[in-house]
Image (cartoon, rainbow, N blue to C red; front, side, top):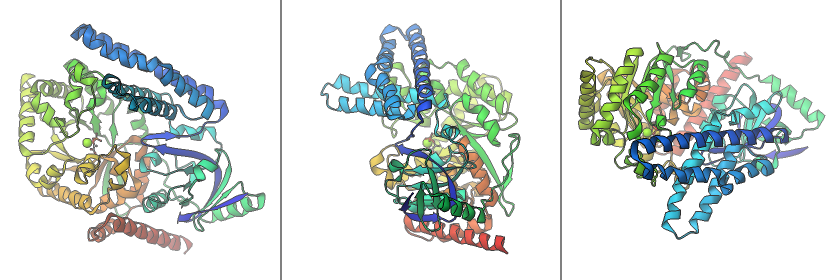
Length: 582
Ligand code: PEP
Ligand code: MG
């Protein structure tokens, strides 16, 4: 038995076997038991075969439309896929380090990048973006082979405790918190955010354990005491019995899981209705939506239908088929489809294989207006699909009223060319600070707003959301962000148009209450996050949340906001405990 001391951030005691996760960039690493290695390697091979088929398919399609010279650009990616330095290395990592395949792919990619970094040759350096594309494609295909972190739980019987280097909201969203009874993390740096998360998940938690995620092996019996800040590894029978007795003293109160997957309207404890929808990228994700009870699709990211093909190769009929499938599957629930949020490199075959261009360049609706032929094609496909169920069209990356007017004119043209007066609601993403600040001017021009917090944070705070070195500056609770959210919500309310939030902030159980407090009542999130969001809403008192929002809007730093949220949650928790004891 060993006792590790950290900081208890969410009270109570939990007992179970360890599952271990570490996350770097957006890829999660987790150990797998020996008996699972063969299955993991098989999943990796299947993902590679699927990736090869997709790349060959793209190559063939481009060859027939554009000639062999352009098609051969994809040969480089096919070669990388089969290169021993990439694929065999990844398979080797799964076998020798006993880690999940997605992580192994990421590691093999990083090793290749290190090699490229030492090479002077510009042509070879260019290949780095091909390796990134190939690794991304294999990981995406792995997602459909059942090797995600949620799958970890299948390898462990009974209750589990999570040990992680850090617990992010996006990782929390992928896990089944009916099975995970508590968690312990190495990191103390994001203590308050993690603490708020733990309290929202209503599980005991200890943070600041430094290296617990490397010292503890998966399957080890553990006790987490969130009241004393202690993690007991391999408890003696006596310690275990004592902990089990304390664990039952403070049972977790969770609402019953949703039955049948019907769309569930949900309201806060004091009766404010909250709309919960999902963001989706792939049609394969549609069955998961039925299971989570979403009221609709709040964001379909159209660009994912490209699958590596340049936009010029995606004909109107192909787009229409995808949209029709989506709308038909969801009807009568509405689907909000965002027009392509691409940059110019993804438009033509030559650009598609080049380096990723600036996300602040010709992008989103700007690109659509610069290439009206492409936007018109897409809008025609959307108008045709609208005949099959409720559909809303949304333009991304809007910065000014003129863009909205021009885009809407193209929309009218597309409908007229089909001989229909579509009457389709048209909205915009609010994800650039200019749009947020000018929301009162944009509101009369559109039927709805959707706030994209991912881009709004990065452009407001001047932080590249993909650059790890500045991740500490990526702060959703920055006072500027809270003010912008209030501004947009008020502009929408004055105009009487709906506004929802579809960025990661909506997926974060630690932040949802504050968003409700800011007056936002409609959210769209990754499907895995929805059940937890539902629980948070059912437990929330909107009146209290509004009071809390008013208080935090007076604070001047993100850290103060976080502390205040934490204190409020802690006070609410003790109040609830007091009521339960009475
Ligand atoms: C956003 O910016 O918040 C958003 C939802 O769009 P994406 O993540 O696709 O840029
Ligand atoms: Mg965005």
